Image (cartoon, rainbow, N blue to C red; front, top):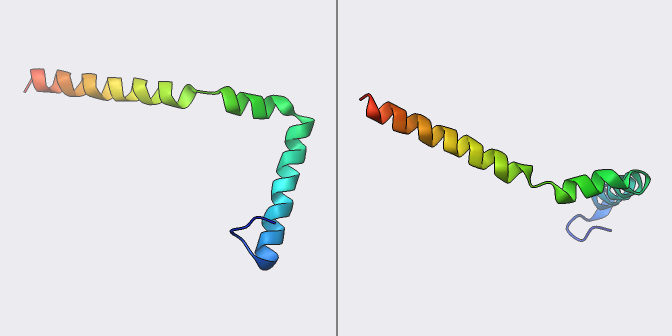
Amino acid sequence: MIPRYRGKLGEYMWQKELERLNRYKDRPWELQARAQSGGELIVLMIVLGVAFGGLMLLSLFD
């Protein structure tokens, strides 16, 4: 049982976790893809770069 949840909620959460793990056993590429994805950091850097560039352009015309 998951230690932070007790009682019926803990049993339910434990069963959901087991179902999730069984799905990953059937489709291991999903787990591998999530573990290797670093795309969130790249997207964040691009968004911050565009925002910074936009602010710099606005400051030039002000």
